[in-house]
Image (cartoon, rainbow, N blue to C red; front, top):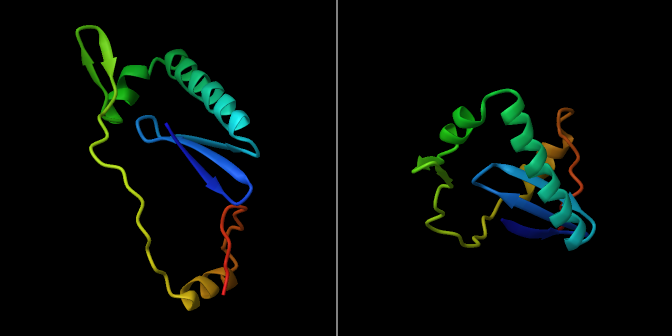
Length: 105
């Protein structure tokens, strides 16, 4: 699980299940994340798709135990995006306002 801070929000994310959530405190983000994982697994079991979905997400069933994919690298990287590209995007009527996305000059 990875925790990020975006403005005043804490984001909890795991690539092994592709699940994320956010909250205004670290503790709430962690609690919401645990709740979402439980709901996700319960729904997969209810729909009888747990094995199919986990295999599709890279999990392996080894000796009756599910093993998550192994993260081989994790690092922060800065990517520069020209400001005019972002400004043009915000003028697009299909642009979705995101509370974690800020433009600064």
